[in-house]
Length: 202
Ligand code: IMP
Image 1 (cartoon, helix red, strand yellow):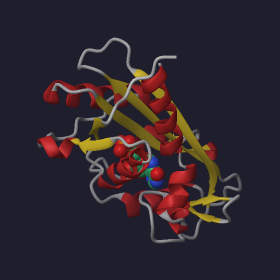
Image 2 (cartoon, protein in one colour; image 1 turned 180 degrees about the horizontal axis):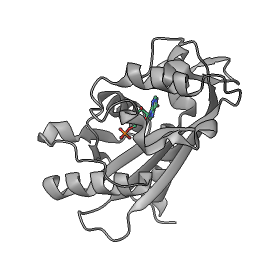
Image 3 (cartoon, protein in one colour; image 1 turned 180 degrees about the vertical axis):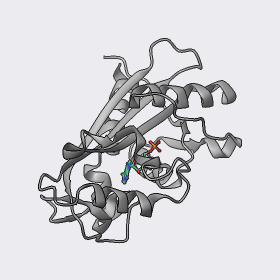
Image 4 (tube, rainbow, N blue to C red; image 1 turned 90 degrees about the horizontal axis):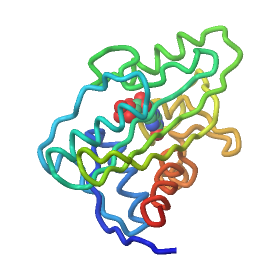
């Protein structure tokens, strides 16, 4: 099988926590990640109803402005008892202004799960890769991390819902994991590894 070597990629994301995880995970594949902030590009509004459409729009926006191959992610937390919400609204669950609303997002989540026994949830990451802005065949990959929501926040690492997202096989929340532990199981690393296979061998 013919394989393609790739050593750098533009990442359409302005979320510094996500950018760091992308840089760490891709560095294991010897791929350098260049975030959109390096080009002074602002984020685009997420106006679609699916993760994949939002991710494609983010990628096209940045690829149009950089004229470079680009990857983008849309991710979120899907909670069984809340009909898979907050889902695509994860970053703006408690307020449409997503800046600094991570603590209130967590409070709203726990409030909405009050007296609910079913705490099953998963993180989902959808990543797309396009070679050029109007690429008609984006490569798309998906990763999920299953766990459960706990009321009491625990741990100082990670971001977003990590202090309330408990992983039974690890016996702790994602926010209590080291970066290496999170990256070894996360929805993001699963999606990135699948995407790398598609880029190299697809
Ligand atoms: P996006 O940046 O538009 O994809 O929004 C992703 C949102 O989903 C984040 O702001 C978090 O609220 C949530 N999320 C996605 N991945 C994670 C994670 O690894 N830890 C914690 N929260 C996450």
